[in-house]
Amino acid sequence: MRHRGTTLILILLLFLVSSSLLFADEGMWLYNHFPATLVQQKYGFLPTQAWLDHLRLGSVRFNNGGSGSFVSRNGLAFTNHHVAQVCLAGLSSEQKDLYKTGFYAKAEAEEPKCPDLEPDQLVAIEDVTAQVQGAVKPGMTETQAGQARRAVSAQLES
Image (cartoon, rainbow, N blue to C red; front, side, top):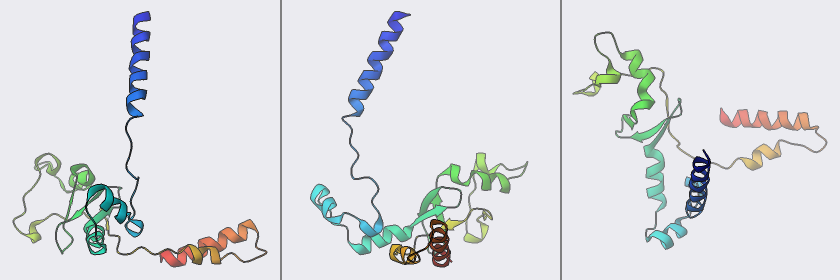
């Protein structure tokens, strides 16, 4: 029993030492604050704004939390199998389990549609901080300030 505890401690120490040698790059790179100069210096590639816009417009996020890429101008998207799992189950029958067998569509009209899977495309990024903060007027209580910020946020979202 004592040997197991020593082994566990050694494994834990090895993990901690080895994980401290791993460094993430720069974290999340936003399209509107992309570190192009850093990428050029580090990787020898200078991404242009047109290239970043192409990536942004080619990306899709689904309402169930999944992500993917657009592969056609008509909205056909490529994603992981698990993202479409609920949809495939709903479109399946006892005779044909689309989740297990998949499907092949020869034409766009033959492609099954996922009625509850909603794709979202990020078409623009705008900093609205000043507008939201501007809703707060001197003398407002915290409650009033929160309501004013929420009202402006709701207006911007709509």
